[in-house]
View 1 (spheres, helix red, strand yellow):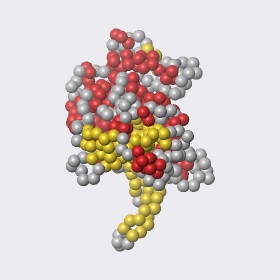
View 2 (cartoon, rainbow, N blue to C red):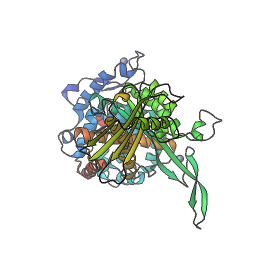
View 3 (cartoon, rainbow, N blue to C red):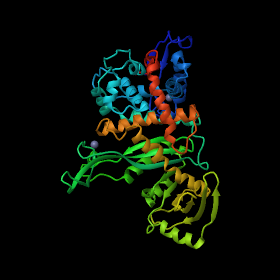
Length: 501
Ligand SMILES: [Zn+2]
Ligand SMILES: [Zn+2]
């Protein structure tokens, strides 16, 4: 299939008629009819064809520019085929007047530039600057399209396509060796629950509901229902760069009844988290070495699941009465600390207790190593204690220092992801309430978040400031926002977009 296009105006290189292959998910059967998965068949070849065609289409005012905004667009287009990624997204509106591409492109840039709401976006859609940014001819004071159109698209956007686009970005970045730094030769992924929004009033059929106590207007405590949406997020941890690999919603009773009409109650984070682990394995396989999780995941069934996938695990231990921590505490007591050392750079003193080959869980057949680290800093009154389990052959062999770095890096998911998303990316603001809209939004924001991370830490080579890693990215985004006003003409997304099929 694919779109046949002739581009005599673009350059001599592509003056003949070229058949552009359709964009497919990596795991879909190849378009050539071989029956093989696309990623193992024609994908590579198609990608290089796309790259060649794209190279011809970027105008000089983007290609040769030093503006951060234009450099970002160039990077996203040339390295990751952003037009192709956005162009592959589909929604189920009937006979839409506004192409899906224009709407998702405006949403992508809403995420990149941190525009706070759909209404604010609607305001921007009236400005010449933003119209040029999304490739529409400037029509000052006439909005390119309305907030209703954006809301409609979010309600009806197909999520699988956005997931595929995110996967494509990760795989391309991996091929370009963007994730070459790791922790002790292990590539670690943190998973954790995140609740971006809750409300007493607004709700949808897929909201999770809980009873909470709050003070009423008369000062009396009352019990009311609170509605919320919750997700489990997987973040690839890096010393230099963190990117989001996947997001899985915690399903409500209503959502679970789609497959089981009798189902009662919503599921918990653990169930969604375990589904996410399976999905990560299916999607990224051996690209991941170990999963890092909090105490919720430190149980036999999760350890068994990780082992079956060939993954190691670094899992926080909290409950002193539960295994394996109960046993570890006894053994640490008997053996005493195994190592103590000073970390000059961080001005810390570290002491480790380290026991391997614990086999006290009935629900896990493998061996567990348990490490306790006590970190003392001269400027802190109390030392910090970290207890965690390590499973998996390779993971169990790393030094206690590296293991501690991994378990501490778990906080990246709080600091560089959740905190930043709520504080600067306005994700606790409800852009559009509804199950599909929320997931679509989070996935689109993930695409923008990952591309910005890659652009800033890889292309621009900025170093990550340990104090506040969100500062660097914030400054660059502010600069990019100002540069929207300097676009000389519309970005030619139409010519960059090869496959409209
Ligand atoms: Zn093929
Ligand atoms: Zn809801």
